[in-house]
Image (tube, rainbow, N blue to C red; front, side, top):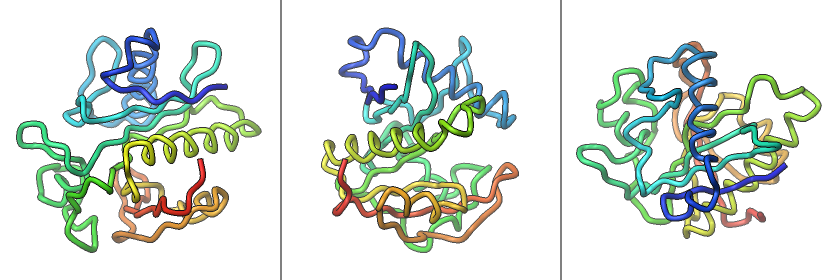
Length: 195
């Protein structure tokens, strides 16, 4: 099992891994969760998939098992910045504007994690291993980019799995229900994280 961080600068060295990641995202978010998201050629994408972002894929034997997108909070593409900030500004109809208990940061040391998924068909005895691989690569990729904190909308049960990783995180907003899932924005401190 491998974890790879992809960027516009290195995707050519990883064959069709980014395509497979976006296809796995489509399966997870559009097919299984039935979210109304943009798609083309069997891939899910949105306005935040830009050269500023990084994509992390956990993969084995040509299959993507899990993924996540990492975006700097300083990102800009047209009128968009990053998902949590744009939601707070009322630009995203499906996400409540009161998702954060403070003003969304624009800081080179804070990155957003989004579009987190683990393939539904991963056997239960392998899920923790996949999750750990994904989170360790996320921490490494974020720290490599100079991030000290990660802001992300995560399932409301995040305190359980964050402790398993030996990480420190704080709630950054209320628990909400979005698309049938209980979620909450959390701020993870990477200063003591080891990848």
